Image (cartoon, rainbow, N blue to C red; front, side, top):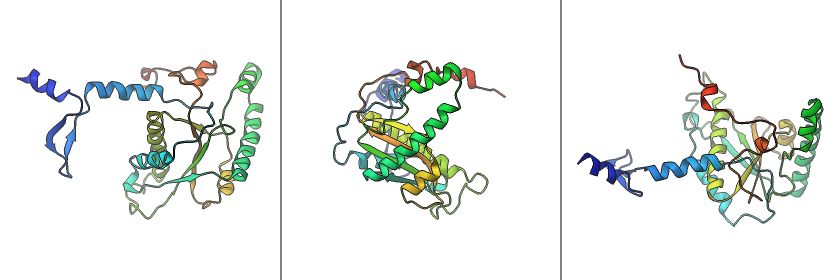
Length: 235
């Protein structure tokens, strides 16, 4: 009997008979689903090489809707999304990247400088969609719950939204590239958003030129991934 019950629960698409707080059936994420979810995590990559074809109409809005399912401190939903379509603003962001990238190269030495110069660190020229993400550091929504002792959790919440967006984009066949080599103050000014917002990141979105389950920086010999055991401390 127990084996039959477990078999029924593991069947794709089945739901538990127990009700959720909203009264709807609780889904069962079976072994096949969990395996696919792990593959999604594995194949999520920081993409720098994009095809220039535009995104299907409405897809970005759909992905942003999914991104807002991310957890947020006190249900404050502090994330703020800014699509960057204006060519002049894109060019100004690109100029900031060039300055910051040159400074980062100057901080490298020896062989590392040579390797750094070979890296493609942004897809700003090719990606059809540019998206900036900010966090409202003190939103009225949520009434400050959970922020009194750790106010930085509003930024953490926005980062969770980014990660949710990243996975949803990968599941839709898109790639996401995080451009972190930028001046946050300059980007905030370029995009004409409130100066009090916290800049989280600037992202390139589009169809990738190629797929890989290995980080591009690992391919380039810059760094390699480590196991969870290497960063686990037990107390």
